[in-house]
Amino acid sequence: MPVDTSSLPCQGQTVCVTGAGGFIASWIVKLLLEKGYSVKGTVRNPADPKNSHLRELEGAQERLTLCKADLLDYESLKEAIQGCDGVFHTACPVTDDPEQMLEPAVTGTKNVIMAAAEAKVRRVVFTSSIGTVYMDPNRSPDVEEDYWVLNPNLMQLYATGPFCLVVVLNELVNINILCSDEKNPRKQPYKFTNQKIKDLGIEFTPVKQCLYESVKSLQEKGHLPIPKQAEDSVKIQ
Image (tube, rainbow, N blue to C red; front, side, top):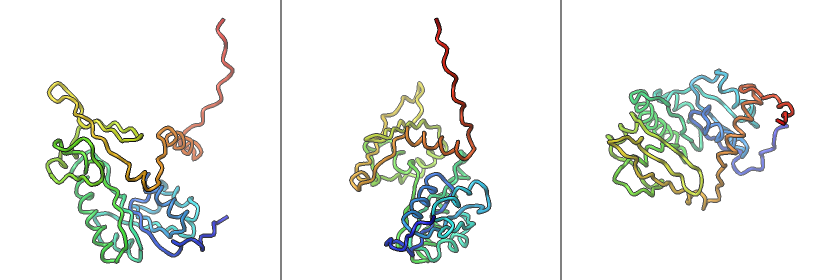
């Protein structure tokens, strides 16, 4: 039974989410629909079965539109963003080839921002890469969203690797940067504080719970087998 969203303050507002089929983007779409927003999600192919989970979200039938768009195709982004009050830009290619990653990431982001400005969008939220804040070896180990990498050589280094990332979601996010070897000992890990986010009242989902719910969902969708109940264990005398 559809939820009545007519009394919600965001009812009637439209938000565009780029790369709507991705993990983070899918959650954004879900939460926006729950709050009563209409959502225009950009994907490479709206008919692709991998995007079917979006159509099953509560409120999707009434308020979700999947738009075919490409980060390097300005006109497709312009069409998707037109008429929107806000944009969540989460789309980005994931590849080890820097040539295939950097152009869509940089040019694509410029296209999204220009299309949003032309459409007079009120707010754009950009989900960036962790590489934009931690790749400066001369920086203090304690960093937050106010710190940005401006050296293109470091960004190129980030794009080509190799790196070892160890993320611990706790009071701080601790990250070991470069893989260590005899010539390059392990660097002092950076600490990303999330205190500002916590001060806003946002709570984090523990990694254990996130993994459990992900596996459970994949089992319910038939993507992972459900293990049979183990028989009574035999006691060894």
